[in-house]
Image (cartoon, rainbow, N blue to C red):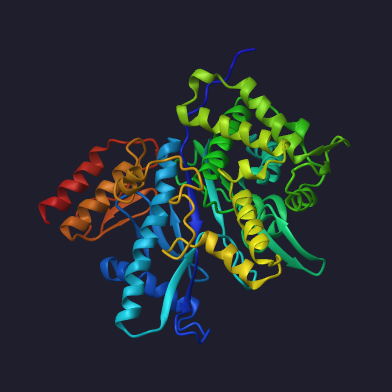
Length: 461
């Protein structure tokens, strides 16, 4: 059998954050509502760029989304280590804005503290997302390729779920995923009205004759770097397999929406779900089968060191799940880390899952402010990228994609106080001195047109 070489591809993550302003005077009444808190958070950016929607010198985008949610989109990356550093840079950038906002509250004599949460649910049950984007070659079989990935996306929550204490009429259940019960369809063009696993909106942010974008919206927002690495790295490898014609139809589910809800309520990963062929398999069975196909199909010499790390995380995580060893899983995976934390707290205090203190502890797990648990900093969650690389990624874009060009333009414009408008594809000086530059190739790192824009900015700076 001829092994498949891993394809170079661009990927990125969009993360929506929850924000609140908690009282510090014991009154319990929030001094600012969510909209006011979000606007206070973005005030330094508004003053700097006159907008709450900014592309940054690091190539990413930070903006205020519908529902008063800060959202950070990483720059385009084609290396997993860049993706991790960029994703963590979003937390760092928001943490800095939080520090400034809380200083402003103190100066103004407002008894409140801003908190930003890297999760997917607020106290009213409203959901906000974590979206993954993968560049694919455009072909007529796009839908069939996406369909073949549904079982992977449904079952990967046994490792990449963020964990959730679910309250409903049937009682209280610890679930693997915050998004599973909020997913309504497998593949569709909807986003909020009827949330699918994969959104098929055809918006590649690239040459539409050549590329399509795989927009995955079922995933949880991960605190754990290992979980982020696994969900993106495994998907990247699977895409090379399906683009080469490998079929995962043996793992097709009879009813993906029923399966995703059954699986999320079983932390052992062993609940059997009905397959399209009439057999029954567990999420653990399916993930083990898909992993075996990937290892057998891909040329190991084409994989980066980080892709090999993904395979190790994937394999070791499934082995730990087979052994029902949640303590081992807790080192790398959010749902297990949170569950182990809650169990220890409940054993120590006698609290139950229904206790409000447990709810606060769950929320603290996702708090990226100084009052959060910050388990990685305490050595309780494994890290996959150095803090120095994260710090660099707050300012410097990836060097191997067009984000390098965009970031240079934004940085030069900021340094020279020139007005420039950019998005994923366009670069334009607002004074109209040069034509709009189009960057339809996501892998482009050199451009005479961009160099001309930079020179024009510096000439009049």
